[in-house]
Structure formats: C-alpha cells, structure tokens
Length: 190
Ligand SMILES: [Fe+2]
Image 1: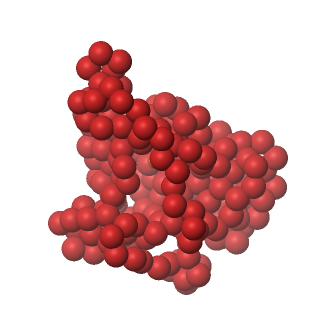
Image 2: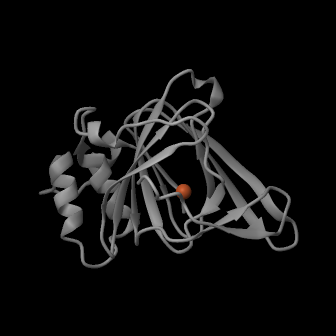
C-alpha cells in the first residue's frame, strides 16, 4: 500500500520516546539492523531525520542523461541511497521485487505515478502525485511506480531513499503491456 505523509504528521504519530535523528544518527541506526525493518519504521526514521545539504555533500552529484544513485549505506537488511535528478530524469516503471521502500524529498519536486497490473489488460495507470521538500512517500509490496523530476520543474531534485531488504533486480513494466522485464539499477557509481 502506498503512503504519502507530511513529515510533521508522521512525527505526531511517532511513539513517545523517539526523537529527532541526525544524518549520522540515522546511518548508525541502520547499521544496527539485523532484519529488514518495516515500511512503517522506514517512514518514521525519515520523518524524524533532520538532514542538511552539508550532510549530503559527499552524496550529491548530477550527470546528464540519467539520475545518479549515491549509496550511503548497505547491509543485508537495509540500504540507504541519495538520488540526484536533473529536470526530466525519471526511473523506469518498476516494482521493488519484494523490498519495500520510503523516499524523502530533500530538495526540489518529485512526481510519483502509480500503476496496477492486470494479467489480461497489462499495466494500467492508477494515480499521480507530487511530493515537495520534506514530504515522504513509501512503496510497499507489490506497488508499481515511476519516480521522476518533472521536466517543467526547472530545478534539480535530491531524494533520500531507504529500502528493506536492499534492492536487487527489479521488475519493469510498460503501459498497456503484460510483459514484465528485469532491470538492475546502475550501481557502478553508487
Ligand atoms: Fe521505486
């Protein structure tokens, strides 16, 4: 099931005792995970995280033609990435092949389109939404979606992603087609 949360709304739902997380605190929290955390937990961590542009400096870099994935941390249970998108960059339509994930918009505007798969009709458009800086969107299993920095945004986009378990080979889809392909995210520079 997809979730779309304003950070401040999620903080109010956080159990008492949890507190603001620094960038380093978030990474240290992930490092202690020995089983994949739930989607709800990923949302809470991202909602509580207070991350600055300076925190992301080592993970900020753009390239032409496609978004750039920068890996912050990965173990067997969870991974964290920073993605940098120029206007017009977008993912293929994909699901996470058994992983769930949460995304926080650090700066810019994120468009997320969701789809439903029907074995007779193929892939069908479902919803479209926009996430502004500070907002969080989560994808459960088997959500099918496409993320991107809209061409018309006129600005770069930086997003923070946490996946549990870490992403492997993803399923990709095409609208109106029943064909499902496989896609391995480009980790050569992650
Ligand atoms: Fe995704």
